[in-house]
Image (cartoon, rainbow, N blue to C red; front, side):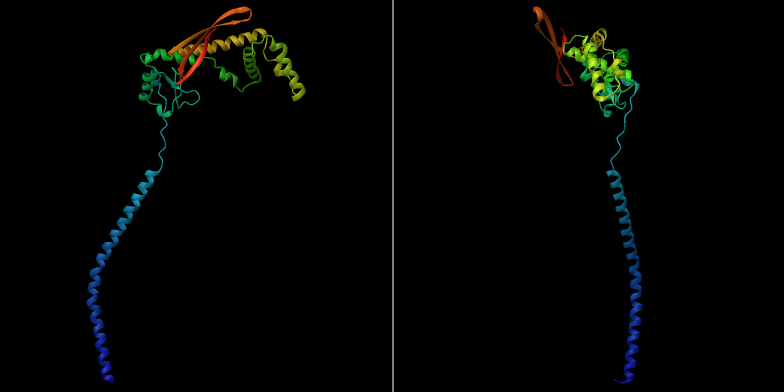
Length: 267
């Protein structure tokens, strides 16, 4: 091929490529808007997906439980705040502590009508009197577990030892005659500690008798308050002690918190 032919072919090829580029250029310009729209749609879909994901994450977070507060009006249903946890309602009729979720007028009223139908028509003054009695009542449990001054701990020990003497039927003078000296010897000999607190512990004959009577009256009053609000049955039995002395024993059975309870009513 001559140089003339090669030059002619080269010019033709360049001319063809140039015309082809000019022809395709409008097509690319026409495709750009479609590509832009497609990209816009993809971005919108991505934003929507992210928004949905964030919404799902927010829904999956556990909601904090609302803590319900006691209202004075709940007293007309027989409820006061529990002394150990004021977020929980305490029933004055059955001495039951309920959950915080029950701290609603509807639930407390339902408890009164279902569990205590015979007391559902009592007025507010009655529940106020129950509240005052509960407030003023001496609670042996708090006395036994108190961690206060030494003289208070000595008083606590006096009650517990008096209860032990009563359970074993021992003479009330055993406290001063045997128990206190025995504890004093143990402290001095084994623990090598001063027995000053022991000497101040009241365990005389009269003191032990008074402690036993006081605890007996407290247990009896609590039992009577429960029986006022429940149906119960009586069981009587005759027994004899020394010298053939006859005793009439009376037991009472009732349901408390869905369980049968049996207590001695009197002897």
